[in-house]
Image (tube, rainbow, N blue to C red; front, top):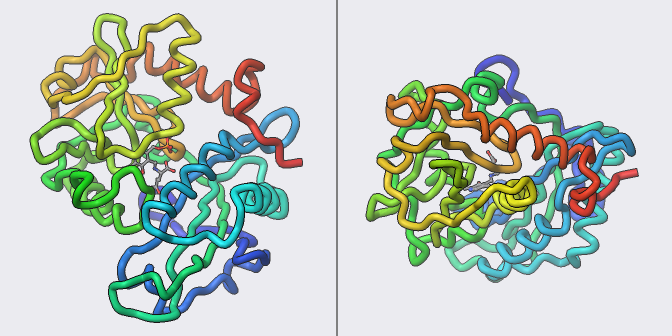
Length: 313
Ligand code: PPE
């Protein structure tokens, strides 16, 4: 899934409403409500290689967020959270991945069209898995990602539900991301209507100033599970972490370090925002320490964070 080259997804067997089917056979109707109106909810989860085989990181929290997203959209998932969790484990196991990205998706199907999705309850559900490397490329992970402020603003909570991981929300993210790439950057920085920093197209944001770690919070942001994990890890390492509200761009320009978190992005340093180098203009020291600790936690190399892992075997 990098830039250029063969970008086809190889998902092996996909779980479709209770059955594991080859990718080519995992099909939906062109009349699916979600395809027309973006009325789907999804999750992004990762499984990592550990000394006890693949382990899924914070499965319970991701499945809980999937159900919260569905509730916000009045979408009925016709399975229990336990059933979805089991199906996720089974899909990873059957495909034999050592590590992979996991994408559960629930959507309003094709019973009827017209804006009202409710005749299409209950939801159709699928779980796909594939190998996915560094989200913003290997260079970004080593040297830091380049961000540009997007001309697309993050939508307020009375326009779209940012706390739901809903398909339609990602039109906003996709527009911002495409423009950022066209401008030669790696990722978009999205501001709210008042100009306060919200998040990236698919990541939460942090900055470091005078040794204190600030976790940017905004009512429109997705409550990141990576963000939550990194806060706990940083505090366990003895660092002070504060939630920062109403952060403006110049606070980031003058920060010592900036980094992004997300399931796909993991912990990715930011070296440049709007053509201004952040700190030294390379990956921040504390950022890289947190990245190492996070990667150690997700791969089972930190006993205190084994509580976050669900073994696949
Ligand atoms: N904000 C947004 C808008 C977002 O999409 C993500 C995850 C996050 C914050 C971080 O959340 P968490 O993964 O729980 O730490 N973005 C997912 C989708 C990426 C994609 O391109 O698709 C992800 O990282 O899986």
